[in-house]
Image (cartoon, rainbow, N blue to C red; front, top):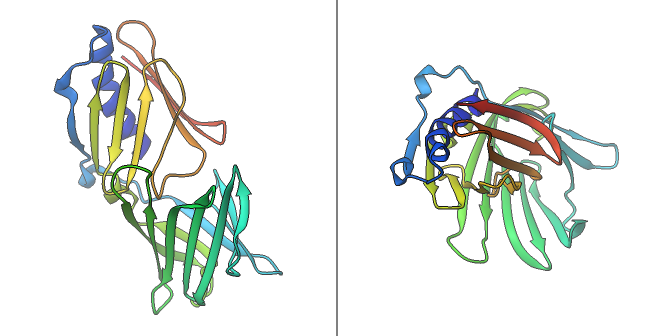
Length: 231
């Protein structure tokens, strides 16, 4: 549902713009989702733990592992991850690239274990620090652990406001409340979805098809997730 809305706004804007091959400043600004007309309930993810204490996050499209022992561990591409276990219900996770901190994430369970709050902060080489919050409700699992199945209740609220800015070569999209942004060139080159809660390995592509049609493609780790065509 969210991707349909997202695509609809961009389709309408870009179809008009690329039909005349000249980006129009009329589409610059903030677009707002009508939450009352959306039935989207939020994505579901699962956190499990192995016999030797390794946590695994899986949302059906992507997954990662986490060992909360306070040690910096390599995760590829000159990046490392360290998790410090403050208590059974509070984890602090830090990511670095080439030894430089790029993001931090605090996981915390509510006292009754029914809510899981994730506070993520992205540290950019230039520009402001970006912080966003995710609140998820428990669907299954023990009340004193992060393990179990969860539903992200705040997804739509974080993505309700979308800012669009166009120049002669690039479509700039951002979700300020989610701390996510995309800079997608009009030539069809894949653009990474960035930000503290951006799913790792997610890319977005736009490409004109004829004068009044636009093709969009979202991928996760190189695998297509959604695509659309509008005129």
